[in-house]
Image (cartoon, rainbow over all chains, first blue to last red; front, side):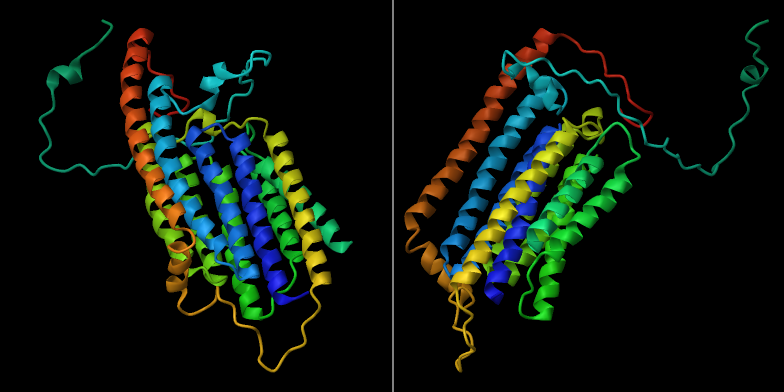
Length: 148
Length: 255
């Protein structure tokens, strides 16, 4: 295969993979911000494709289009993040399932059936070495008996 | 055909890997998913045709792998801050890909505008909205299996179509004999890159540039309007909702 053509195919493969991964993220994740990040990722995949085609056809229009895509992505980020912030103020969290009241009427409500495992270990606090003058012992506290 | 078989196998492995790596209730499958996704990536790489130079091929593989692996990590990370940072890594990989194929200005613009401005806005909003880190909805997915299968099918179909197109193109373009003048000069690869890009941008696409500038202004005004209107209505909503009890912590570290 010709070298330029195989270069084009390499770019198309990477762009398609990035687009597909972004789509999976948009469909599967529930955090509003991560969903939006995935949408940006899909744009990124398309721009990789466009640059590949631009190189293959020796045409600047693909790169120009990517430039405009970056500008539109910036607009999109400004408006969408303002919206996300407002939704957060309404709902108190970033869960997109909170807004499932906007679904179609014939669809059943989504209920969380699984509770996620907690995998975070308890934090280890640092131990402070005692410093300074030791305060005088409180006799009352030491001799206090609760149930007499 | 050998390539289509490789594409199908790679999509299957990648889909299974994505399914296992997406946030789910069980934590056991993640490494298995990582292995499957890595196998899928290797299979995707195996079906790629070779580019002329070995060095160019290596650079291309390296940037492509960085891009795709960072994207997968961004989508599957439990902590949204990590998602944003992995997305930044994938942007760096994308910038490398742009640089290799003669889009130097776009490479720099991607790093400066995307990673420098848009990603920082993401992190800013993330810190405003969810400073404590992981929440329960970051550890659950909608229909992880269906989403991963959808993605695998889409990638398979699109790549199959591209492979067919490229095969057609290869059949249509006869193998050029190595002429005495070597390769024909490509205008995209010219040394005066930015000058030519600017010439096209402000020549043929001048109206589009103006439109995009107007769009940026409109987005700015729109964002301010959304925030102002929304803060009034959200205050009313919060008053109507009344004082809310603090949510119960899921584990010792949150809240």
